[in-house]
Amino acid sequence: MATRPESNLEELQHKVRELKEKLNAVVVAHNYQRPEVQDVADFVGDSLELARRCADMEAETVVFCGVRFMAETAAILNPSSTVLLSHPTAGCPLADMISITDLAEWKAKYPEATVVAYINTTAAIKADSHICCTSANGVRVVESVPAGEILFIPDQHLGHYVSTKTKKRMILYPGFCVTHTRLNEEQVKLAKQHHPEAEVLVHPECRAEVIALADAALSTSQMIRHAKESSAKSFLIGTEEGILHPLRKANPGKTFHLIANSLICPDMKKTGLETVIKTMELKQTTVTVPEEIRAKARQAIDRMLATA
Image 1 (cartoon, rainbow, N blue to C red):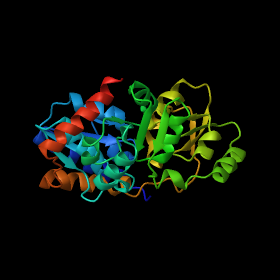
Image 2 (image 1 turned 90 degrees about the vertical axis):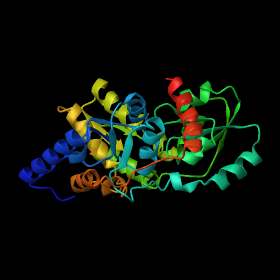
Image 3 (image 1 turned 120 degrees about the horizontal axis):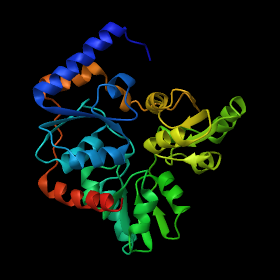
Image 4 (image 1 turned 180 degrees about the vertical axis):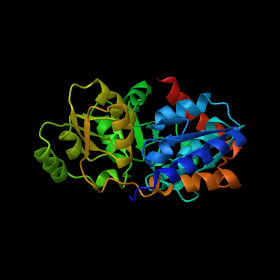
């Protein structure tokens, strides 16, 4: 990605801060956002951290720098706030891999299973599920459910990772993250040859064979905390490249290498400072959730938050 002149960057970030004050707005950003967007946000984190922040937040306007399902989650948790998505077409292919019809068919096929929905789903899917989870708390959520049979939707790779940590029967819907599944076993082995001293951290949305080669499978915020606490000085990172910015900020004396250059989410990278400014100035891309769906989805999210 081309670098922006420092003076222009500061001017744009100053404009965002002015608009935040004018709109009584809070800007939240996911760890995969561009560095300049992360640096102007009030809160940066993974899906679990941002859900917790949104549940406690009091703001007239929430500007969500991420993708649509994340902004929907903010709207579910903050019905009195105006929630603006930073880019109108920032979506999530994984979330789009399961529809209400698909879920109904799988529930009919496995009527005894409790539905655990990854946070990377639409509000309508959350509303038709028992409980939500994130990559940070998937194992804890599954263990908290009384049922011995779990229908895990929609990410098969995260579901498989969770299945290795529980004795419950896990039925895995065949969805996947396009970005994380690009990473393969050969790329990890090659990166380890180039950096044999590095600790390998990957996301649990990765394929099982990739996770098997890693030292740890962690959510993005868990990666940041782990890197701080680890005695290692060098790390190989297997998740979307946006995480390198907060990792380096939090660990100035350590080195971080992306395992593969293909680990870029096009939807996360749609948001830039210009689009944030345009969204705030025009108050466009307002994300709303119908009350009937919102109330049911809120129950699934609240159950997740209660497991923490």
